[in-house]
Image (cartoon, rainbow, N blue to C red):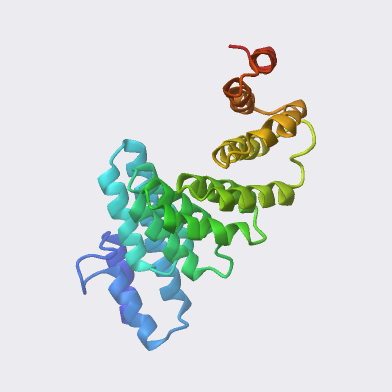
Length: 262
């Protein structure tokens, strides 16, 4: 084992980290671990290989060399394929490059390795959504929304949005209503951005459910909670105008301009 560790260090210094096959630092460290699975020197050597590739990937990204950035990360993963943190970095890089289906696979692999997979599932859902795979995205968001996670309310918003896009309006309304209740601060002023987005999407869902009466009779009161963006004003004003209530629509739009300009 001592000879193998010496060879591994020599190959590491020569930057033969994972290539060529059979003649790399990684191959030597793995040979040591095959003899002694608890050998800390070999484990630390593999961690050094991964850290080196991650640093090279970071530098390549800063140079704008996406091809090398991904290649370095893929070699790091080949050295430590069960490293969930590394898979997160890889998934995020693929997201930046708009390779969404591959990013989703990376996040899903990370989720399978974690005792608490909710964060990985959330980003897998976002990647699947961007890859135009709504049913797969829906499965992730639904699980995250039901978990105790900092992402659960965002997941509820996106789950509602996916259901809306699939014309499953009753389900979307149920999810949005449950998320608004669970978040707990969406009926007090001022509304944060997520609450505003949840209420805005709820307006659109109710319109598709032919429940414009609910919007005009009750949801208009949400505007008094100081929404974080003009979108909610626009959505509700549109409902009033479509129902021939022009004066009220103009009043809502005037309030929107007062708050947000434009």
